[in-house]
Length: 192
Image (tube, rainbow, N blue to C red; front, side, top):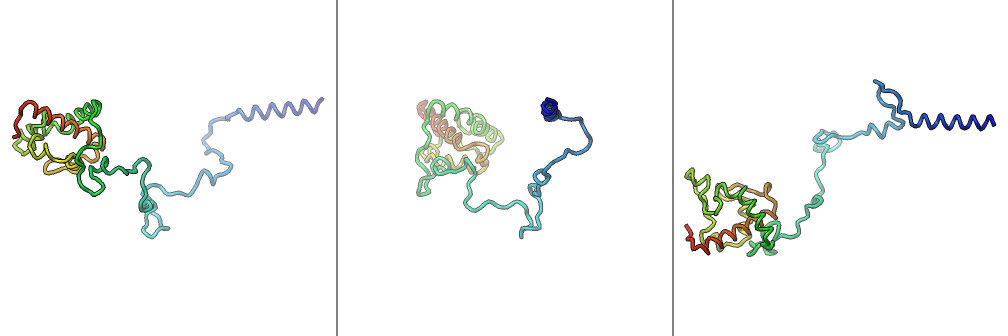
């Protein structure tokens, strides 16, 4: 019986010690396996005497594609067909949702210079700088892939919108521009 009590006391003491977090201390924590905690490693952009170029960060293997960045659909991501020519029509259907998104993006990125109706009477025109009307014959008949390229890379005074506008939104803007051109033509508007 006394041995049983001793075993119970040891078990209770072990359970109590396992749940005890101890007191706060100014000493660093004890690590039973310090090599797991203090591993030799390089910080980003650090120097390294090990590599021939002196940089710790290694370039990615050629052909590496970041996760979620594989862009196999050339028409959608570049506005080009397999032969490298501009696609005639957008690969994105002009649904009401796409048109609404295109109108919203157009108001943010395009309307300041081209105005709400796309007539080229925005801020730049008020300053005397040339701004293209989206209703001229050349832009009404041009391929959608060309418009995608202009939005992506910019032209003249127009900056590149490659980074602030993702490809889906660029196609939505093009759908909205085509809608504006259609409405302008139905109203009997003349190209400037």
